[in-house]
Image (cartoon, rainbow, N blue to C red; front, side, top):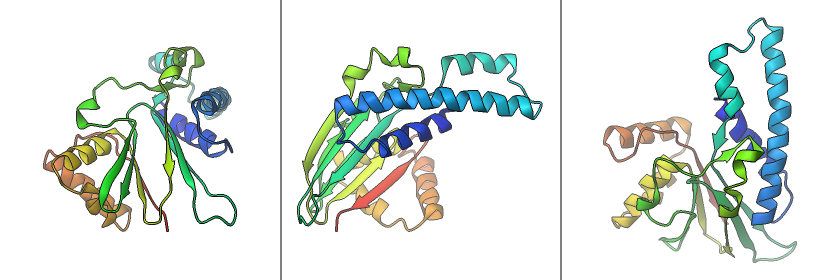
Length: 211
């Protein structure tokens, strides 16, 4: 319940961290996101009450449990005036980062094979107490930036398809690079689902090219 707002809060917390991504900074940003969630939830409940639609009994358990989300984030660190730089990434769960370099798949993070996807991934909870057992599983990866590098950040259904295609010797990034707008992306996703190549699950994609 309300996983969309929670995912947005996590994303904003990462983007506003102004720190090099690391396991320690990831723990801190998750803690800040949980605080932000508590504030957002109070405002949400008040808005519901103000319009005469208070929370119903069947919603209470979902609100008490709180929403969950995966998290993958990457930062690009280029010193002023420099022609070189580095990338730093963190992840928890089965949303993935892929780096394509010189026409080949160079990095898959945090999951390295399509067999690594399951039905019960580690998730970031809006409840700090539920995160305690998983914070030591935050993944961290880094590398050098090269002109022409292409980064793809994808949620689980799309990430699993991406890895399956790469394992077959195909170049799934070529399919994604041809997408020009949201409507075309939706058509590609529908085609992959209809063919059985991709699970019918939530799909999010961000593509970044280093120039």
